[in-house]
Length: 231
Image (cartoon, rainbow, N blue to C red):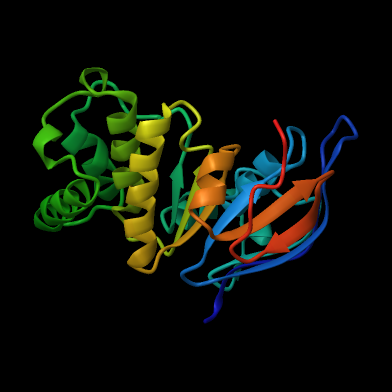
């Protein structure tokens, strides 16, 4: 399996002097499912933002699908992000668009053919179990349903990498397990998933590779690992 994410000696210093990442070296293979865990302030958010180029490293190289994104010009960033799916804790749906329109929007911006848009949107809504809600608006949905719409939107371009930043953080336990089942199905189709999470129960029960960050450094890299932190 080839590397879809490769970090080489990545450092990130903020203007206030805080060193958020300290010489990260990492490779993630195609099809892996990786949890990012660690205490608050460990560098998880910075790490995640580096992968979809919301932040640039102070030093080092970050390769996504063999492309060094640290060197991207700003005008190239939107095109790069079309190949990365991102799911946030707060859903970030467009409130005046229906479920169908929210998902279709991601394909419309790349000028996909309308017939292809319809077929793909229905495919991903079926995958997340929301075809019956396609005409609903976000405020008519539960939190779990809104997150599933967000996931559907993030994968409609068939990205090889899906980044999830605390995707169950605003959800109750039962709904969180349902969301994890959706991620499982996506991963089984070959998509690489990198998920930052504080959810110990999920990490301990659904075993995947665990990267633990502390002080901006990877202090543990464990296949089928556990959460390893107390609240």
